[in-house]
Image (cartoon, rainbow, N blue to C red; front, side, top):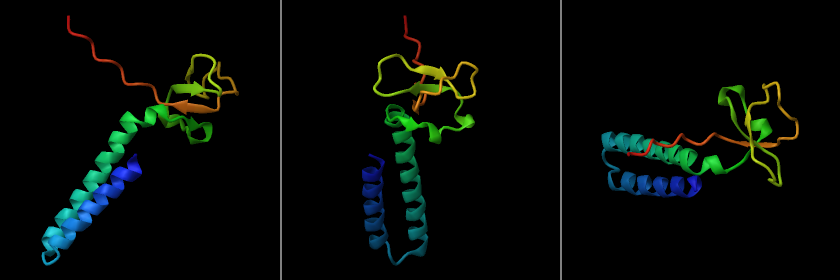
Length: 107
């Protein structure tokens, strides 16, 4: 998903650059806009699709904090925590971020 979105944005930016090739100021603005669009695509991917893509233990860092830990095939609920926890089990191989807390429903 991010590769496709990124490729589409790069193609659009290239078309805009060609259309405004004679203006250096316009090219600078288009370059900045292309960077912002790629950043936006990355942020959207990481907040929508990335939570469902399991990442290997080697990708985890303590800055991620507590996450959901899995082993495959999935046969039980995930462990919530980190490898730094006292009750950590070595058989967890992959993790996903914790989901975003739901919004309180209106009553």
